[in-house]
Amino acid sequence: MDPETRSTDPSNPTTPSPAKTLAPLWHTITLIVVLLMASLAGAYSSHAAAKSGRLLTQYLVQMGWEWLILAFVVWGVRRNGTTLRELIGGRWEHFEDFLLDVAIGFGAWIGCYIMALLIVLSIGIQKNPAALHKAKSAVDFLYPHTNLESLVAVGVAMTAGFCEEIVFRGYLQRQLIAFSNKAWVGIVAGAALFGAAHGYQTWWQMVLICAIGLLLGVVAYLRKSVRPGMLSHTLLDTTSLLAGRFIKI
Image (cartoon, rainbow, N blue to C red; front, side):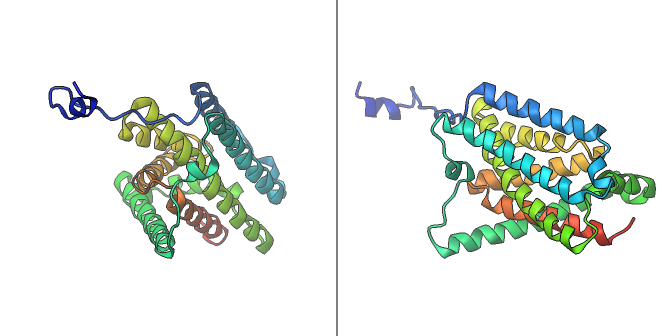
């Protein structure tokens, strides 16, 4: 039978080829283990640098860590012939493409806050001042106190938005989709890992972060790019850090 005829024969349907993996399995497992170990260390850390007045030092260390993790990811995918541009995904062929990504990014940013508000209301955290204070205390070491620290904090937010979206949505989510051959598995598992990577926060904050990862994961999957997520993530972290300087609970 002719190959072309065989591909259209209903008795012998073609099946979609599995998604291509971006790096070896050992590379992905190593990354996950490192992220979870760092999260566990953060959960038990006293954050001495920030609490002793060396917040700028901590910011620089945080940014360095983000870039180090990204470098490990880029090194791993290049072994399989994948570039950083391919990890980011999407191309701005026209100015309208840029505007669309910006619109999606802003929309996802607002959507993250709406979703977070609904989750908070559903579990009743807003009625528990002690829980709110504990959550604020868990991240208080991150908040800037001076104009210079606020400026550097924006750099931290931009670094997180760029690096973490590539690591979690551009790499891990796509790897998990390729390993499972199911988009929803990769999106959900990637979001769960995103939440688990923030062990220094309280359990319900990690739930919120997981939900945010889920929304950004869907956006990245549908848009086939992490560009809108980079904008959303940067805006989320920037507003959170700057709000923490001025809003006292």
